[in-house]
Image (cartoon, rainbow, N blue to C red; front, side, top):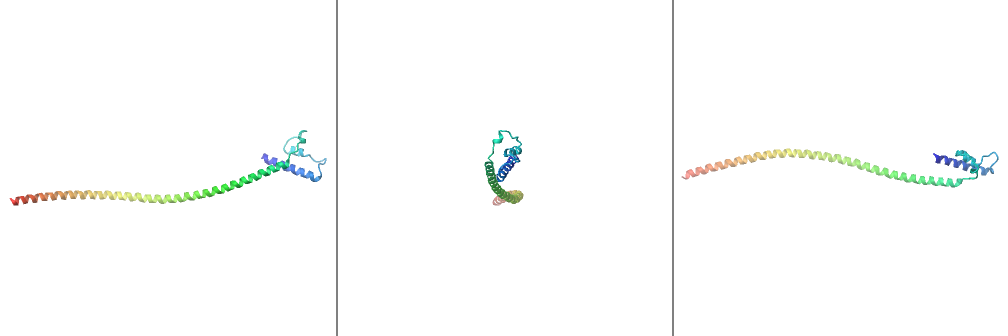
Length: 160
């Protein structure tokens, strides 16, 4: 805010000095340049201040230079902002793609888990069938040995 007020004050002073130059100088009714500056800046003119003449052109050049610098910085920041927005959009697209992939992988994982549970149930059934079959085989082996031993006994009795 202060810099804007100072800038306006400098512009008014510049306008005033140009107007004085075109009119051929200061007349009795005119206010002097230092008095205008003092009024704008709320400073009372003293005898020491009447001899001070600010270099308005130098100040204007400095202000112009600052404006150019700020314009360049603004352009640079706008370019950086554009680059960051592009990167953000790319990242957001990647996140969406990864979410879709994650959904597909979760579905596949659920299918695999269900298949594993089904295979475990089948395995339990097959183990039960295997145990039953082993028991039948053992029983048949016992019956077979019993039959052999009885037939051997009959064969021994016949030979006697």
